[in-house]
Length: 418
Length: 162
Image 1 (cartoon, chains in turn cyan, brown):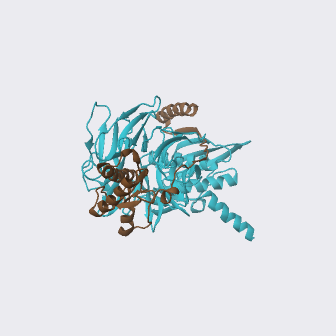
Image 2: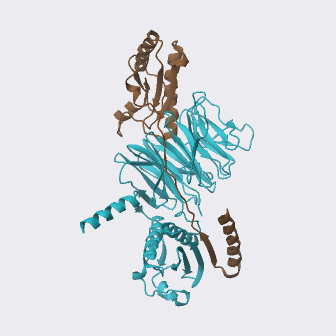
Image 3: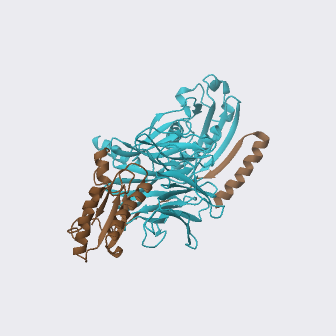
């Protein structure tokens, strides 16, 4: 008996290094009944758990299960809408697991209880032994149908861990399925996804100096973005994947350059005696935002790439520290690190508003990265000397991804993988 | 690409279906997402920097928050380092700039570099050849002291001369 317990505990630490905690949900959640899917019981249980965790974590759902309900339909003809209506349920999800040899798929239906009809039927073809992914796809489908916004459970997050050594990690958006991309004795910072999510660029100090590397996730092949004697950092991919903006210290000072990944030509973007770094591209690739110390304190600036010799335009004016900005996917604003009194917090500024909106209120929040649907921001926090990842949705839900050991930081959200 | 194309067709199918029955029909495949782990080969010389060449000119210069200007105390320290460098023309030095953990990592990397460049400029102005100096930054990645208080921060805002 003791042996079994030990194995269970051990396997748990192996599979989920990051544990999810929801700290605050939204005020008016969707009420959704998800019945246990028909078919293979083990797969059904696994997928049910994954779907529930994903939807709960969004903070936008109040979920009901078999035991909460008056009837348990197994197909469309058995659905009695009134049984759900009197429980004030808005949506019903039923489904089945289909196994054929080693191939596995899920077919599910979504019903709008108030309209009294089926609104979606979907099939997801899985990969053997990757039921977790299958569950993510189903929850993303449910999320999209109900909220009108694409789901992000099937997306991934890059981050760096420090525990004696430094590791660049990739995991599912819920922190599970963690895998190591790079192990190093030296610091790793600023990981960035290529737009197709097949490659990553990052800064590694393995040569004793900051250098930007590009690594293929599936093959592990890696190369220096630029081979010269300069310190190089802060990589950011253009939305079409053809260019990498980065910071180079060729003349001793941090300046932003654009690297053409095909012919390796370098174009200098900034030229100022103060610090210019942390570049990031607008969703359509027409502008670059960056942090500059040219006003005497770090502030965010924008350069319009469509205009010849365009002057950087300052876009933050509140406070004396605004840095590491990145655009919202819909280009309606940007997120950044803002100092308020002595605290560093994550803030958002919409282009059509003349004030900033703080999203967090701890002391040392940093490295904000927004999900591809534009709804969730993951960032790094310090808590009691530990560093860990936390998240906040634009609808107000908050969550944490605390590590069991070591430090976790520098999160970067992938694009859609579907 | 195949999947994307497929998906595009489905979107058309969805649009068509939704116009007549307002129900979505979707079909998709799970993305494989295989990962290969790589080990970085470290060539950083972190271990030797405190002993072999640290005898004459080794020193640490401290800075104010978000500043890269030298204090009068720093200048005293640098004067003796200049003397040591003048007396031993064979010594090569590395200036490694650092920042405290407040603020963003990339900005701190640039700030560390700026601090190291400030020290380098002082040496060059005082007759030391630029060829003898290597300048780099570790930003906030290599703190001298771990701690979230002003004492620790002050010890981490530094340039190490080795």
